Picture 1 (cartoon, helix red, strand yellow):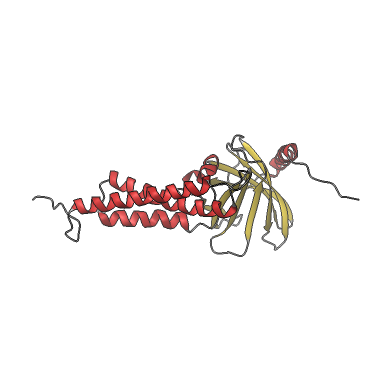
Picture 2: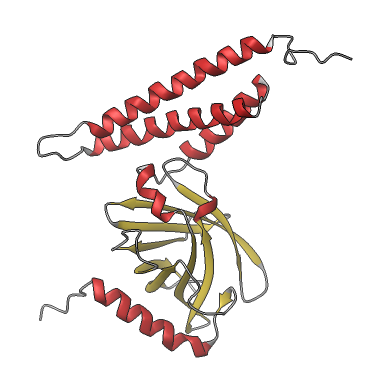
Length: 257
């Protein structure tokens, strides 16, 4: 039986392809406007904050359209699939609240090994988990969901987002079911070239204590330990690594008195 050369509504595929080409052109033009806003500088060569925000939105919108249309055209998908995939890509990209220049995020799109200090039952401990930012397909943002295993054996889903401002990388994470308690990490010297980065974290612990803590991101595992709370025998080595790494690039000011 001959295959019908039309979509489910009886519209010839040529019409669907024509619409796809028009949508692709719209995406290219929108991306062009985003680049134009990014290139527009104020006096002194600095890009205004307003232009950065407008450029980020337009570039994300245009890039999402172009990426969706090209991928679907190569797959010879139907018109309905084009619209669905475009909607998915745009929704994922534009609903993120933490946005950056997409090019600046390239050096952060990796699988990171994350180490941090927290308080459990009145005792300070190092914990380990992974940030799989290489799996984030968002345009202009990094956002992934991870599973975090508590010492009780229960697994909780966390949303982890990241953005870059100048040379500073900021990571914001929270339990998917709890928008109130947010873990904010700042890595002040993130150039994308080193294998390890050392920063400071701000969080309210499970016993409701607000703390400033040590955080580490590494491209490679620093210890053979598995996820969760690390062995106490590893604490001293991680403390030493953080002290050396953080203070090598950042001066902590003493009291004024």
